[in-house]
Length: 392
Image (cartoon, rainbow, N blue to C red; front, top):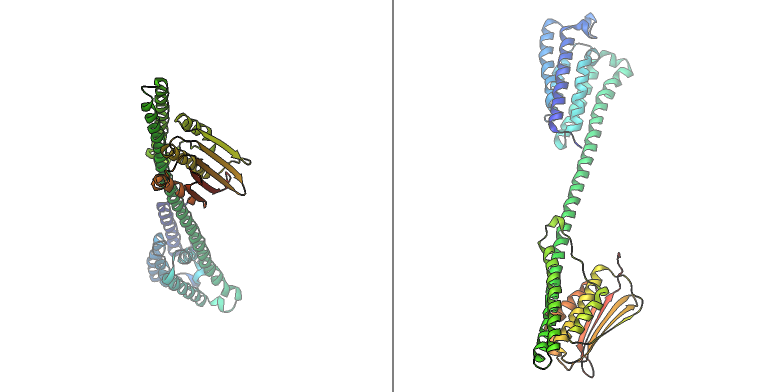
């Protein structure tokens, strides 16, 4: 976690104050520091100039992050008046220059970085030329190079690490935004699918109710008991449809952060569906072939809805007839066949939204659908879905 900016500002201000006091003591009290050689003691005039320039130089370190080239520029006139000993004579000045050079490496970029690199090179050259011992000793020659050059390289390394960390944070933030967008898209897709589910629920329930109402009306005078059973079936179907609609509408109205999906029907619920259709007056036979497997939720739901829509169409259009449902597992796919023995009615079935919805569901999973009249009468719907197991 990156420290707050004001922490950096306070730290830089304290560092500048400490170095300012240290350097002023070295300027005004030569015996207090290491400048105790009479040849290296500044004259009174040089003391005034050195104190003023030193104050400006060390004080500028308080803004070393915002204006990193300013302390480096002020280091040159300060170095010119610190006596023949140069960097060797004033530890406070040496430490302040290390901080200034480090800041150039860590805080500059692009054109500023190039100017800073040239400035550091000039400062190192000036320090070497100012020290008479550097002309005679290789160690004295390399000391400013190692100290100042090392500080600059350390700043570069810190800047590189900081840029890497910032880039990683940006990538993480971008991934978070992508995940949030993906989640919002998934929620929108799920709600659109639930809206289609709601249409299927209402269409199926109304289809059953209409058939039961017609049958009950026909038998109202001749068979009151049959009419009573039809009314009971209408009530049961309507209550179940309303309950499922409430669950689905609850999902549609839920907040994005806390969506709780209603339980979805699947092929395991075919027995209950077929019982409802039988109660509505259409005899249905169910046959399951092959070894049933646990399907992926989307495939399972689509398979159930295809059978439901096909039986609803049979109830509406087949008239006095019977129906047969075949669920077949094997060959890497799931085959569904819903056929009835009703006379004709194919044109009405083909023109409705039911078959379009079935084709859309099948196409979503890379399957295919065949629907049309059968030879010898009746109508059949055949759907073929890839056999995607749950979790794949």
